Length: 330
Ligand SMILES: NC(=O)c1ccc[n+]([C@@H]2O[C@H](COP(=O)([O-])OP(=O)(O)OC[C@H]3O[C@@H](n4cnc5c(N)ncnc54)[C@H](O)[C@@H]3O)[C@@H](O)[C@H]2O)c1
Image 1 (tube, helix red, strand yellow):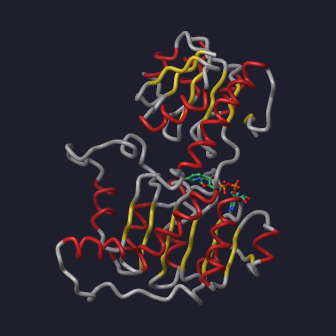
Image 2 (cartoon, rainbow, N blue to C red; image 1 turned 135 degrees about the vertical axis):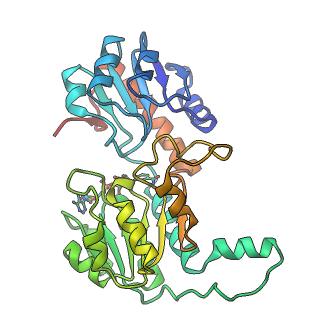
């Protein structure tokens, strides 16, 4: 297949080329897919997309008109694809259904403990030979109640790690995980979880019903000093509401690997330009907020599986085989 890979960075190209082994004709562009850039795919059989490439109805129409009949999403989340529109335009959409969930779960724990023990601030200090400890006081994680929202593949591994720290676990999900129940997780309503947790970690997908599930109302019932970690999707959190609670001193710490307006900013070097997103600039300015740019998945193991699965998805689409990674509109 002739495939145009959107939103490419050097690391994408090296993992995809290694996994391809000459099977498909891959072309790369750093452009993100939108209504303007859809025209670049004219003449290709397929496109390969990442989380901030937007395949909405008009984009699907343009892709189909240019001959595209398959989309290989190189991530697990696929809220950027309009699957109903894809079906109308006879475009088969596939994703990477499974890759190292350890990558994201371990990163969430990294954010948690970095914030708790102020490791990021300590590093900045020692680089300037400031060896004072004032301001670096943390908590034992042992014994602190951890609330896991979404106990699927990533949430369950996160829960297992936190169980290892000696934390009582609360869970909220539309279905219960046997692995989490075996860790002693107590499944509760979202409200109960928010009220009772010292640390809340989000691992639910972005859906209409989970959009802004963390908002002014839900933050108001959390414990003063609560820690919030979001490695799932930015849209789960109403960021402006969160900023209000940070400013009022309610939040102990906030770790964000995702941000609802990340598109066009994350994965880019904007260090030479003026940041025009006041919300993002404000978030980054808080001492108890640690923001990373959607890097939780970014391990050698995860990138290898993502590339191999993406190439296999393209081969299956070419052969007309509908594998388990094919996405259908619900
Ligand atoms: N930051 C990153 O680099 C990165 C990488 C991979 C995945 N993610 C995000 O992590 C999310 C979780 O990934 P996963 O592999 O564990 O997915 P998964 O499908 O295995 O688990 C998601 C869980 O959320 C639950 N859920 C669905 N609706 C819910 C609701 N309304 N309330 C509570 N729980 C609900 C599901 O039942 C499921 O158990 C993905 O959707 C993606 O957005 C982020």
